[in-house]
Image (cartoon, rainbow, N blue to C red; front, side):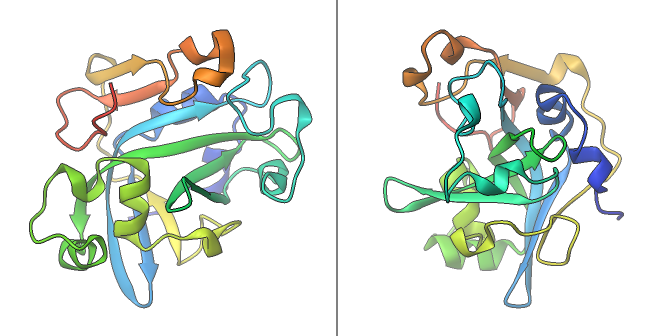
Amino acid sequence: MPKLPLAFYQRPDVVQIARDLLGKYLFSNIDGVLTGGRIVETEAYAHINDQACHSHLGRYTARTKVMYEAGGVAYTYLIYGRYVLFNIITNATGKADAVLIRGLEPTEGIPEMLLRRGLTKSARNLTGGPGLLTQALGITTKHYGTDLTGDLIWMEDHQEPVSEDLIVASPRVGIDYAGLDAALPWRFRLKGSPWTSPAK
């Protein structure tokens, strides 16, 4: 299947991109092992008028600098000292938008994913959450800045369009600090998927 091209990520509307990523496939080839699955949950973060975004008000740090690159690279960072989150940078150079991948339906390399997660059977806690799916896919902070059209981490379109009535839009998770922006309905899920994160 063809990889999603850079043009897909470099469009200006991060909310649209977050919706469009539902039903696409995310793969990693770490240490020669292919793992991946279908994206079932995303969150959009915009550099303008979004206090939840790491680049809000032009914040530029060692952590956020990759956000200012042209769309199509990985933004990985650690939370709670243990979970790595995987984000896709979108938009043009200097316009630091990102989409967080929050849930994945595993389809490829499940035995390896189980091993990485220390699990014995495939259930939601394998990839149903942003810090879990990175562990399952072997994505770490060292993949910060990875080109998402390369052979390490990439997305594919398997021509499985998701109709509007199957998309649940709701406020994002864990961003109470973002004031009124915390209520923006920028979390997108596939209705009825058992692989979305348990967060309300």
